[in-house]
Image 1 (cartoon, helix red, strand yellow):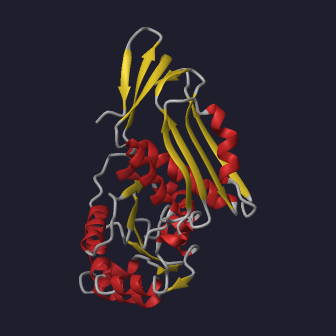
Image 2 (cartoon, rainbow, N blue to C red):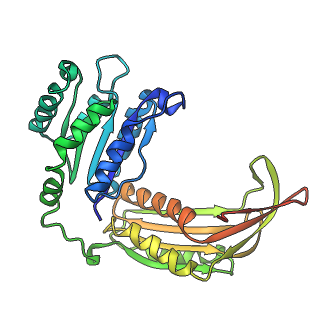
Image 3 (cartoon, rainbow, N blue to C red):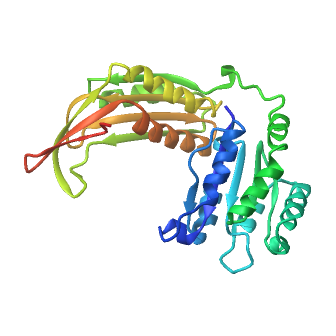
Length: 305
């Protein structure tokens, strides 16, 4: 599946005082071309450096196309071009030139903006202005180019499951997970693993300002299958990684282990990245719900849609 990502640098939009209209244009454009693209991520100008740098720390999770909007002007808080530039390995100035030429057809101020385009790994990146007109100009320049570029960048890449990471175990268990930690590490670790990381999700004594006494987890009959699917999809992007995953059901007390993930990889960067992605996706996609019992006797269901 081809993927896209749009990041908008706009302090006003991030704070809710202005409705961003440029991001949706870029998202719609990428989806039209067949790039699975989530809604634009809107961040304050002061945060664009942190957001972009964090994104590029995990090259395997990068999209096929990354477009930004905003932060291309000449004021001191316009930083997007500088931030993206330091991650581009192979600049493509011809695309930038074509973008400015198209903009000049509409306004002489087009060249007062700044832009950069290029390749990082197998990802095409380009910075676009925050205006709707500038984004539309960029999209039209890219329309005939992106499918060809993506094909070239992925030529020769083996996307078969033989290069995916290894799912050692995934299970939904009504039995305590504490006794499985040593076994999970033993089964997951190999001589090639230079990093073994473990996440132990335990039941805490508070939630949303309320004191929690205990809780109970319930799972849909498809939860086992969905857990394996989610973890396998994550591991597809991390060929060297091995993962062991289990989630509890039933009644749990404060301090009990509810969620256990063990990941082994040659290096810590990919180990931590895979672990975080597994935890995030299991929480949002696997049909497991919890009923919390508060100290005051009230209850609350979490996770039900």
